Amino acid sequence: MASLEPLLDKDGVRLTVDDVIATVTLANPAKRNAQSPALWRALIEAGRSVPGSVRVVVLRAEGKSFSAGLNRQMFTPEGIEGEPSFIDLARRDDAGLDASIAEFQEAFTWWRRNDIVSIAAVRGHAVGAGFQLALACDLRVVADDVQFAMLETSLGLVPDLTGTHPLVSLVGYARALEICLTGRFVQADEAQRIGLANLAVPVEQLDDAVRDLAGALVTAPRDAVIETKALLRGAGGRSYDEQRAAERAAQARRLRDLAGVGE
Image (cartoon, rainbow, N blue to C red):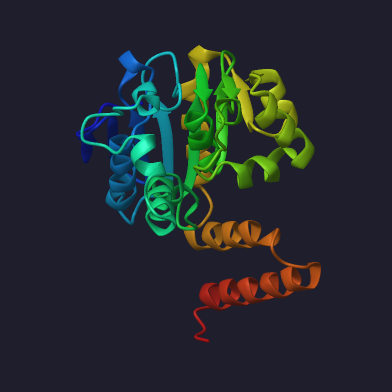
């Protein structure tokens, strides 16, 4: 990716913008881009810092691993300095615990906004929270060395960083259940075959493949892309007739806009 002056560079997250394409980079390869509350706060800030002119956001990582999951210190009694440990979280009342998890989830929610299309460029390990961060994006391009795994259940936890909904949507309930409960690794060929990955390429071609995809995504008029994305995102929650109505309403807006006719 192009080397540009970052709009944000903190806590293992870097945001750069090149015209209508923004790149969010996980930038702590020494720790395999392990995740922590500080990194999640930086991801939230990155989402808020993306200029309104941006149409595509690429999520990538430095080093040989996309993200090896949670920082292991979070599993220790003392936790990470300056952050609540898991024990501290467990001792909060229901409202406090729910609010804490909801705050963590915010780092994973903005990638599916209708005004952008997000692409995760994934290589190496994408484990647990790393897997869920890749799932947070609209599209995934993976290198041939990718290894997805959802290890939360094997640790006595559940995937709680917004990953369950897209996983079931992509691969179906039965396969999602099997992937989560076994904690096994899903590699590139299977990821593409079952719908986790849109494209799998040799690792040395990953950046070029993502760049080509991003370029293709910005060729259509922006308003048409936004309307189409909104239609597709909402389809799963609508009946067939409700979706037909949503299509009609969206097309009416597009026709009037193109014709310069006010509603």
